Image (tube, rainbow, N blue to C red; front, top):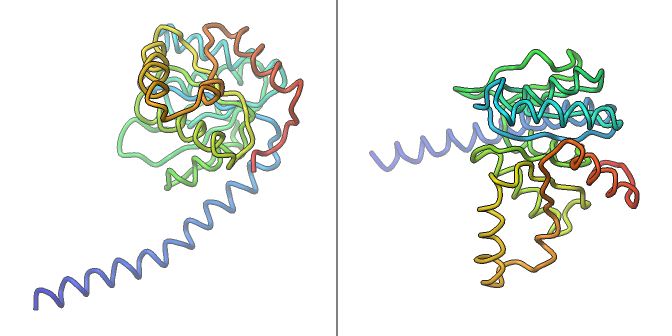
Length: 228
């Protein structure tokens, strides 16, 4: 009897999984339709826990403002902290301000600096991540937590394996990121688990000017277009 109950529960899960495909498809279609008409953008990642007045919050506002003035829209995860700072900088510059929101049990809520027609809501992290990667012409990675590292290493992996076109990935805050970069060089590279050129995919910056210079220098030799 217990075995039959287990099988019944498993079959119900499989049925629910099949119907979930339509919801997933809907998120992809809606995302592609809205993002494809926005134009070249740069995504800013970082901690949702960073408060206004924090050094990195203010720096993210400055970076987003400078990147917007250089002609790019700004994409963030749509929530508080560094995400809010990124959208705020775009808003202050009169630039395009996009928020890709995710439904979470804590931390996440829409910030007020997203353009009203460019706020998208997602239930699935993996669909949202596709939108970041496909429609960003660069990643600006501020200090953050697991989610920030997830986005960073997914992008590096996709570029490393030629699944997407190369674009600039910029870590902001040399003091914050130096330990990670040292570990990549002294442990991962030393173990021959990556190649020296893989580390060239990641740049370090500490100011808004440096971020814009890295992005502009890259696109002097590359075309602005979706990444796959």
